Image 1: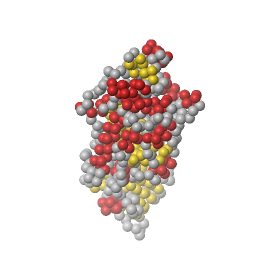
Image 2 (image 1 turned 90 degrees about the vertical axis):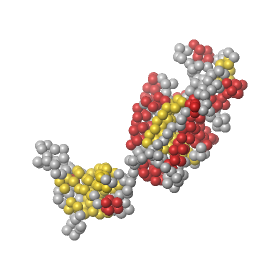
Image 3 (image 1 turned 135 degrees about the horizontal axis):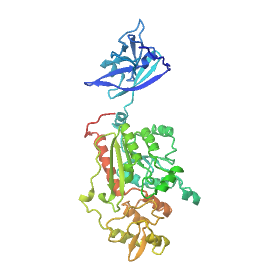
Length: 477
């Protein structure tokens, strides 16, 4: 058969897996490109070890060099046209050579072909590298992004140390109209209620990953990267028209997984934790997030949880993802077996009603009662639970209101915290009321979040303590 005339590039690269038979590794390079790099069938080869488990280089042997290997021609018969017209093969199966040149945990290797030179180097096993870092280092360090501080408080109460917070509130149309800049408000609140070593008051989309990479060289290994991804564009509270408009003007957060995944790849945490509205679970963004994390070597668990099942007072359903380099994470079980689901919240209303604003005669309430859209039921002393509290609680007609003795009240900040099971000492008193309400409304339910973080704690202790036991077999990828 006539060989094709093909351009010969200066460099050709490939990534390959070791062939493993009965626990013995073998390198097999079968390629049409070998001929283009001046390697011919039958030619002898010499191996030059790099040292320090960093691979080896293969060159054509000279008369004075050891000729330990040679190039082979594929033996299968070709009929007519072929997709492999120039395919040659070289193999290296000596266990002493491979053990000297490649770490035992390595499963893949990189091939760089140049004229008369082929370089084989190990590819880093990302999962193994992450696990290895926590053999002698405290894993309970946090990188958290997009936080108002409640999740930080939940983790710090359980003994986590906040290494880095990435928080920047992007300007909204109403901010521009009012001529105000609130980019620091949530970051400052995280400092009031948490103790990060490093604060990045930068837009998630604009953070320079090269700077983050440099910064991580100065930090201890991160046990958990926690992301509260923007939920507006997955929530039913935002209309389809508004979602389309936000895509057009780039105020959308539907693509937030992209910068988050780039950062996760750099931070290389033992665990990635993401929370969002329940609708996120069936979105294309979730599919991309889960698939990419699995490709990065994480074991991914997902579940939609209801705050009422964990001692909360509001029917807040949230999507949770926990991706771990260790297998076997188990989400917490419902607390409803110990306490009745939906206990009356009469005591909370009676405790805080005196500080709630009476809004009975406002236009907002009058419009609410005549609005065509279904409104959440008023909260009363006989209510067993509270509807989900929204970020827009302070300014929309479908917010949570209390009805008591024929009067309508807007919940106070203290009552909102209690309804979301957020500790009363979580401090938003320094903030303007609108921003304080917004911070709480877009936050997590503390009881639910505390339960999930506690399960993550148990999972890490099981796998990172000095007496750790891996519950399940773990194939490093």
